Length: 136
Image 1 (cartoon, rainbow, N blue to C red):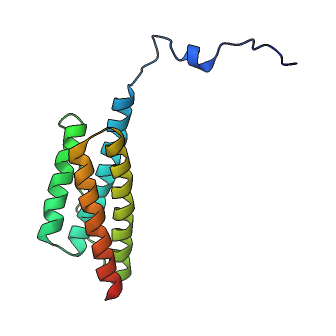
Image 2 (tube, rainbow, N blue to C red):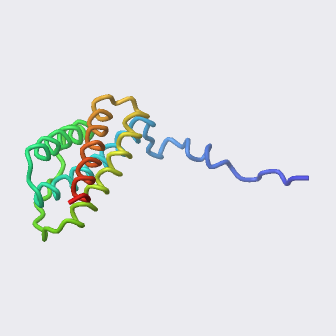
């Protein structure tokens, strides 16, 4: 009824020793570092638009987590100067909330407690900030 498979499976082809392999943990580290770096960029932009000690602390903690995941390499920091208007700040908080949620999912799947706690804290902070900015 079915024709036999005549070619090698992609799974056996991928076992070739010349092909670079990463473990699941390495892939999750890369993904988590990417989410946290993107969240750091948004945090830096928010800091430029509405400076606060809480955002400064969050940016520092995010930078340390990204550096830890990237083997000590500090992430590039953004020095954004943009026009200040409320809808822009609200949209930034919403994007940051979504990124923190993605980081939380990846951190939980790799059992990284420090990154998961930080991501959850950032989700709460951006949800609160988004409500405050939207209410004014």
